Figure 1 (cartoon, protein in one colour):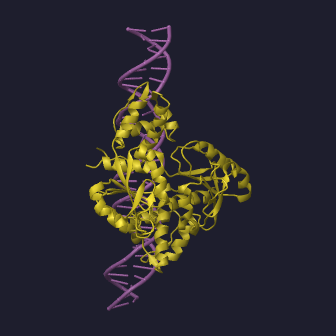
Figure 2 (cartoon, helix red, strand yellow):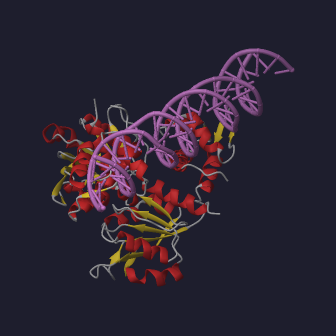
Figure 3 (spheres, protein in one colour):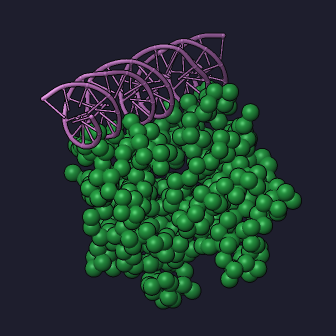
Amino acid sequence: MKRIADSTVRRLSVYLRYLEELEARSIATTSSDELAAHSGTTSAQVRKDLSFFGSFGKRGLGYSVPELTDRIRQILGLGREWRVVIVGAGKIGSALSNYRGFAQRGFTVVGVYDNDPRKIGKRWDAQTVRDIVELEDDARRDRPDIAVLAIPADDVQGEVDRIVRAGIRAILNFAPAQVNAPPGVTIKNVNMAMELEGLSYALSHRE
Amino acid sequence: MKRIADSTVRRLSVYLRYLEELEARSIATTSSDELAAHSGTTSAQVRKDLSFFGSFGKRGLGYSVPELTDRIRQILGLGREWRVVIVGAGKIGSALSNYRGFAQRGFTVVGVYDNDPRKIGKRWDAQTVRDIVELEDDARRDRPDIAVLAIPADDVQGEVDRIVRAGIRAILNFAPAQVNAPPGVTIKNVNMAMELEGLSYALSHRE
DNA sequence: GCTATCTTGTGAAGGATTTCACAAAGTCCG
DNA sequence: CGGACTTTGTGAAATCCTTCACAAGATAGC
């Protein structure tokens, strides 16, 4: 299959959220126009995005909400459980695992790790914090798919290497640091400093 | 001035982080090649990004670290204090305000708000949580520039409207919801669900 | 001062993404 | 059943962003 742009995948996520809302309200059909209005894009963009994966609508009528919801879930790979480990038993990881959409979409926390002796062994949400050095051994048993990396900026690369050695091939990185991963490992960076600086830039360049 | 791509501004942020590291190590000069290697891009991209704002290097030599650091800080609008209010006294806001780069780059928390009576009046980091209904009045006195919106997905739009009424023109939104702002107000969305779904998509579409 | 070498700054080319615009397919109603 | 209307799916055009490639400016060594 042709490579799909990152921006397309992100928009599918947004469409899905609105579709779930429609489903909860028992609304049976929607249109590219309506999806666009609630997703901050245009109807042509919605149709183009969906067209990469098939044609799910009916001309003149629009899209069946349950069907399109299912299709997008399938496209995004949300039809199964994803096993997640959180590296860094701090506030960000906690916010994430308490987020109700997290479990709802099939993401399950199978372990929480830290390197701080004061945290190891303590209760943290529904988990007990484990020593980060045990990640590689544990991974053989727990088979996590995704690591959420939420540690301070120091030695981010070392932890990325450890995660990769543990056989995990997807990382959500909250540390404000640039990291390299071998090919075959996907990293998404969420960088609050960068976003704030983007706002600072926007505020500074108003005419 | 010509409109600058969002991606360019984000990369400037990354360059700045590396430059600060070089500065801390008292290294006097660097090159587009070196900046690129530490920022996950190419040297041509670095030079092109900088060229939108001027020419800061010396041919054959590279860039002066202190000078380029200053210039990028200026471009990003980091030469001044930015007054920030946090709406939603939860873990995300707390993680953000405890992040050491936050104060370092001139972002100051001038108020924390919530609508939960159990939180209002309580201590939260170095602040006392105030009632969200007071935001508009307080803003006249505190003159915040940026609002960090970190509440659950319900009624995000209502809070955005309140923030805009309070005269704040930049919002960093952590709520997993699409929001509309009037022109002149900049919103950056940080959406963890979206990022996770992006990873799910990547894991599902490996050959 | 001359040559070899380095690295920037930047037009032009190439590639990717978004927008346009319209034929095709379906519904609705008289 | 036919005409008016709606909305999709998609090539083509337009726009935006990245990469290429190289002249020009600067240094260093002899």
